[in-house]
Length: 351
Ligand SMILES: [Zn+2]
Image (cartoon, rainbow, N blue to C red; front, top):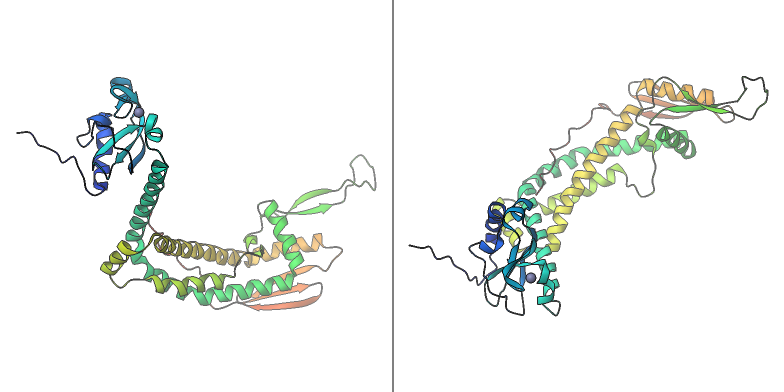
């Protein structure tokens, strides 16, 4: 008894795609796949099931190229092709790159490419959301818990910058960022050859260790405050959560592509914001470590002959004082538990 395979499909048979790939990998002959029709596809509407498949090199070497049902049904013709489904005949065709584009006129073929790309994107987004939708509640909780710490973080950074002044904050940031944290001082050039008064000065590295956490001093206009980023996540996440897996699944099946994209965007943005904000908190905590402040104060003493010297001290575990010259300009209180960095939620799974 010979099994007769169904060769005509009234609906797009996407479920056969993995089978096609498997056949191609094992045999390297798209035309011997049991669902392939050897006829020419009829003109008119056509859909792309698999675009740009490749016959593996080693199969081409031993078995040669595949015949193309359109231009070369009986002779080897192509190594790269597309798997097509015609809603008119209901059949599947593996055709070569050779004639895919010429055989289908009036943009029908390029439209089907666009459709195929959208379909593939949607499949990926669905897979992504199916894997991650259950994390929404956990993310929302994390955002809610992080909010007070993010607010405190913003407050401390604001006071720090106003104490140092924005201009000198930027100066320190640029200097540190330019040397991976290594501070430098400029020294007058007194040439060893005895040329006194020479204008040749030189930069020398200052201190024995680099400044840590200086990234927290970077001020960019586009950067939203830590609190604003966390608040946004806390506000938006509960709106996209589902009660049950069934709810989520029903929604996934019906939601238009744009909503699906928006939702995966929301999760990814939240994850990125958490990561950034926690990294900034880490930076601030390293920046305010006693040794780090000592380094900065000593550097300013050496560097700032023409402007008020900066002094920044951790006068107790929970107090930072900022001095310009002999005047204390800020006293910043740190919250209890400052420096304890929150543990990020596990990363989202890829589709
Ligand atoms: Zn061809």
